[in-house]
Image (tube, rainbow over all chains, first blue to last red; front, side, top):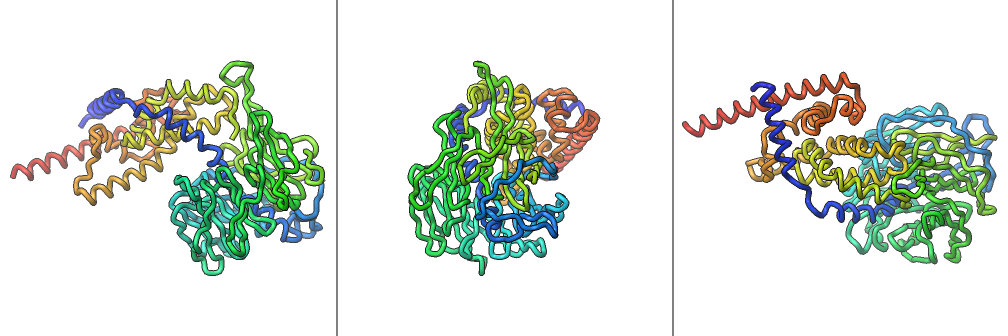
Length: 381
Length: 174
């Protein structure tokens, strides 16, 4: 067969494809997808709270060098210095979640869990796990690193941080997305399309076996652990799960979500409009919102080094037309939990939008839109 | 997620103008029309998510194409598995879609991903060498050599299919 005939057949293929139109419901279908986006985002950032927990219980965790005196933990409020970019770590694959534990920074990336040595900012271990590059999450607890597959055919991997190897692969039918560890149990959100109820899968960390799931209101997304509870954000509700009994309650008033736990408070987001949006502080005892800090486009929240950190998404600026004239880069904000105010001037984020945020090893770690670059901010003493 | 001013309307216009072509590009890369529609949808969702972060919004079409090419790699692997599964069940292995049954579509699906993308973008989407290089993030020289090798592989695959068809016909006639 001559090359000409290959090209003729390619032409025939193109003509047949050009004669065919996509299904007419393409636009409504896309709109339905876009309406679900906020909940996808919630699932995407699940798992960050464990950094808070680890930073709170590991003395000296914040000391970056041997011999350096330990800095206060999250329970000891401190006003850190201004964050400055200390390293831009380019990875060889897209990643979603970043978390800090066992003296290392861990990155859930497509097809592997990466371990970064914070002393050198280099990847020192690549642990093959079948996780997606978009919705996988990391948590620490019971002497292990836990990673979800971030896929509907859910798997949770248990990784031994001493040997950098997978020691258990636990199937979680129904999906495995956000993850935390509390009271000897691993808690995993299952982001199912079915409306009600939603499920939080449980794994016994001693036996690596699935326990009966906990039912919560539909579409559980963000999951956080802290204040002796597991907090699960569903579509319209935040549930508090007692990690010892599995009892579920909804004690929070007018709280759309819980994205971080720290300084004895819960932290979530609010949005009354594109400009009137930001972070809110919720009193876990009363369930009431006690403070609001306006940060439009603040999309990622983590608690550590005594402050709340908010990574802001980039925003478009228009002069009246439909097409944005320019894009404003996002910024990294610090909020002092003693005053509920923004500390200092927010720092511009490199790259074009943040996709992951974690605090630990004396630094703030931000993933960015290209999905492959991790930026490390150190704090000016 | 915040809705950025202008994003939804701009996306709507982009969808109207380029959705069919995006589906066709995905179809050329995966050999399945339903999968292609799914990929095109996903590409638009990703574009929407990242709209505010695009350095140049005029580059949205390029972003769409790149996303479709990247998504098609894993989608095609799944599709080949499905076809193998169908083959096991039906012993026919034929896609019910008449366009997908074209030998050229099947041969394209069997090309290595890089060569397939070059052939599709150059010969089916009619992009220039430079445009193809920009979509794939490779050099113009690589585009030329990958396209050339892809066409040669297609030629060999189609020739092989013809031989097998002739042989099957001869067996049936005996």
